[in-house]
Length: 384
Image 1 (tube, rainbow, N blue to C red):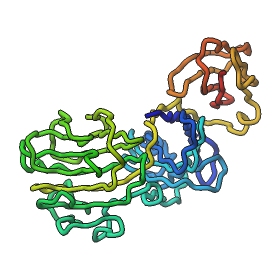
Image 2 (image 1 turned 90 degrees about the vertical axis):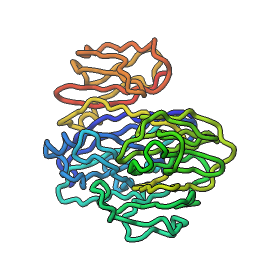
Image 3 (image 1 turned 135 degrees about the vertical axis):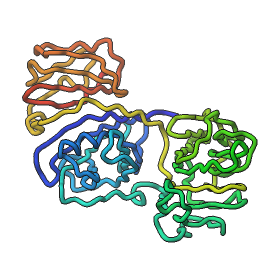
Image 4 (image 1 turned 180 degrees about the vertical axis):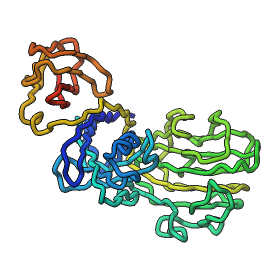
């Protein structure tokens, strides 16, 4: 499985309906264009809110494909508003080979939320309706919406599975290939050491659920099954099942466990959430495009930028280059070069106008950050 790199660079611009903009550069190392592709943006909204730049509930967050564009990109705020780790999924219309840029805008105090999981993902259900949506699910009688279980951690509406059923909630709305299924489930601790939680690809379907079993740990199906070694604990847990090019893997609790990548026979037809002799509960379930892993690197935070000046006057040349490049109108600026993984390659404390030597760099795309009192801008440069 190949990689897409998301390099995050910040640009803060002047006061409009949305007072600020933040640029995200998505570097696509695949040889083909990705369309309607969901990317995960992780950021610190606590700092922006404490500085008075963003609403306390993040309702003003928007994403656009270019500065000044009237096109709004669909997004869903997964979790963590007003914390140091806010997770937002954005559906990017097109990521050509090589990459593209998008922008997050914020700062409009009158804005209302446009976070929309249905518009962002290939499949989405957060179980906030009064009953299960039969246009999405083949519903067994033991699958219900229930917010009356008396557990304070389960006070909001959730999907509840009880009894003995291997197909408690089933959907055949999976894409043909290249997808990831994300779900959150609650482990009540019922069954003690004789109960397992399972997640992964098994046979012709993708399973997630809780059942009686011999091992007291989270386990995964991947062309069979295995024990993760992650001890069970009461509370909410996060499951991800990835399937691409007839290979699959499972991740538990955002990396507490990651199964081996294994080959599968055929493409799964259904996703199934179930319980077996125990109670289990699920919250938000969504399916997204998946063709590559995302590596996310955040660059330096920039502030009080005269964006128009930088756009019109700062020039990196020649571009592309093979051995060296210069920067117009950047005298005495701090210059930092990053590769597409966010690794700092070169630091020039005070640029003196002479060419910067890159003759020992591998060929590929790099990012040049130019920082001074007058300008703070990041440019792409291609080294052949």
